[in-house]
Amino acid sequence: MYNKEKQIAGEKAVDFIEEGMTLGLGTGSTVYYSILKIGELVKKGFKVKAVSTSSNTTKLALSLGINVLPLDSVETIDLAIDGADEIDRDFNAIKGGGGALLYEKIVASLAKRVIWVVDSSKIVEKIGKFPLPVEIVRFGYTHTINHFQNVGMNPVLRQKDGNIYITDNGNYIVDLHLGEIDKPEELSSFLNSWPGVVDNGLFLNVSHLVIVGRGNTAEVITCK
Image (cartoon, rainbow, N blue to C red; front, side):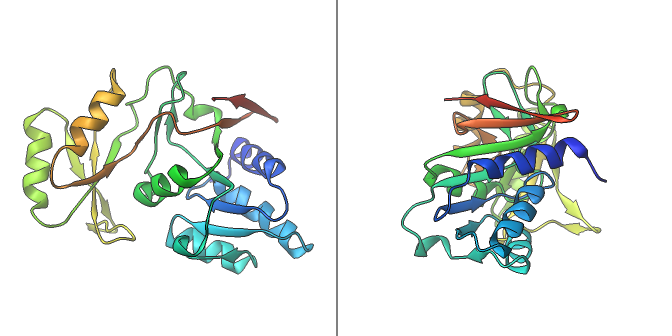
């Protein structure tokens, strides 16, 4: 469904791109508009390179003529643009609703600058209402889910079209229904300490700018 705030935020992020940059392209319905805008610039001769966080983003970018390279072939990422499912006032975020949290976290960790683009509904007082995605290995996955259940995290194995959802790197995702997250740093460490966990969708102290679509305008918030 079309969301004007998403388009406004996504397109505004392109103002921060300089010619010759290597970009990290995120995944989701808001950064979609960023990628479309980048594609328009490329068609006019604007020179950029990009790495992608998902197969869907790669397909979209290539269809628009954007030069997408393997991550291991680039020396640095100048700017990463991505969406988020929730962001609190301390700029802690939940990401991974689109299933690309691991690749998104790797790209963000390598980028000199990270911009998140969201509509106004994604800004919350406290994260946790949106289910927290946790990527897990398939080996022994039922035991990992039972572990989350035993500690009261209300895990639900993600499904798509009646089948277990599989990430681009061949793993499963468990969505934890937590309600509110009081101590995200402690929670992230706890989740990643379990052997079956690859990574989780808590993105803490990652973004440099957040661009929020509010009505007909884009609000640019500096995080760090």
